Structure formats: structure tokens, C-alpha cells
Length: 279
Ligand code: PAF
Image (cartoon, helix red, strand yellow):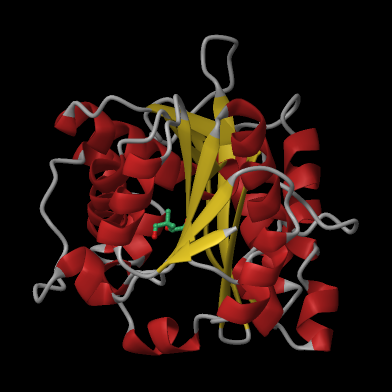
């Protein structure tokens, strides 16, 4: 496996070898099975897979959150080395991507930007769109892979790709879960053992909420979910929304024409966890 710190070295290496297809897997490191499944899928579909590991400062609205984000580069690279196939790691410094202007660009992301994660984390999606745009522009991959755990992020990235008319296929990959149902996330590593035991309540509450779908309206289910979380003082519900997954607008009724999906964000200790489930 080759490891590059600067994009120019990636370009030089690409000139030396002929790859017909390139898969890009953007990550912020602290790699877990969810990332590895995206990387394996990319390896199976492309001649070369580039995995970027970069904790992107412009998508954090709180400095504390950026500082607390787990950074485990040595162990990440060890995990990548074990994946059979052509995998390169790109681990840039902020200046390799942003030069001396560490700022998000401005995209017209429309209403997708301001609900749910966007409402709770100001400027977050402009930062995500900026860094993904930079990575796609630098490497012109055939395909880029993202997990559905960050479903809203996926919609934002598709929108940015359309606005910028980038020639890439965005591949969305299903959520990977631990045996007890908790959605895999780099942030899980920051949970205390007690918090880790409690965290699967998030997924199990969503499953119960989904089971209510036949007899209850989205509004009733949302109210039930809010009440349920009051029974767990350690878990602070930020939002639970049932939306049309095409435009992320809240829905009033379930019907066959609407692809409903529930989204949740919960604070557990000082760790913010998100999840979603097709309804
Ligand atoms: O999902 C993530 O890890 C990040 O938001 C991404 C897509 C790598 C951009 O920094």
C-alpha cells in the first residue's frame, strides 16, 4: 500500500501507472468496519482505491468537537494494509487541500442544508461539500463511496456534484451495525463503557417507532419517541424526524407514494450520535 501526504505525489504516481477506474473513499480516519466495507466495495469495483484520511476543519462548528475527534492514523494505516487489492492512502495536512485559506466555499444546497444536522450544526454541510469537492476535483475518481449513516450528507454531496457537474458516480452503501444494533461510527470510540451499553437504545427505539407505522401518524410517532427518551436521562434527544427521503421534508401521513425515513440525533455524555432507518 502506498501512503501519500501531498496530492502532487499522488498525481505523479498516477502518471506512472494506468488505472482505468479509480474509487475514492473519503474518511476522517478512526476507521471501523463501516469504512472497511466501503473500501472493500470500492476495491471490488475499481482498479485503484484511494482512501483519504483527513479530519476536515471546515465542517466542525465547534472547536471542541474538532479537537475531540479521534485521531488514530497509525492503526488506520495498519487496517488499510490488510485489505487485499490496490489501495492508496492520502493523508494530507490542511494546507495541502486548502492552501492558506481554510474556509468553506458557498454552495446553493437549498432546503437540504438547513434541516436536521444542518439546523444543529451551522455551516457543517458547506464544509463537507467543500472538502468532498476538493477531493473529487483532485483525483477525478470514477466512483466515490459514502455510507447511508450520514444520509443527509449523501444528499448534499449528490447536490454538490450536480451543481459542479462533476463526472463521478456517487455510490451509497448501507449502514453497518454492531451486533447490538448501534450504528458504527468513529465517535463510538469516545463512549464510556456505561454509555456504550446504553447507546443501542437509539436504534431499538427507532425500530419500535417503525412498528407503530401501521396504526399511527408520523406526528404521533414523533411525540411517542420524544416521551420515550425522557425515560433515559443520560440520552438527550436533539431531533427525531420522519421525512420524505427524496427531499427531507417532514411528512404528515404515510402513503405508498412517499419513501419515508426516520432520522435521529442524540447526545450521550459529550458524544453526539446520529442514525436513520427506512420506514
Ligand atoms: O463522513 C465523513 O467522514 C466526512 O464528512 C467526509 C465525507 C469524509 C468529509 O470530510
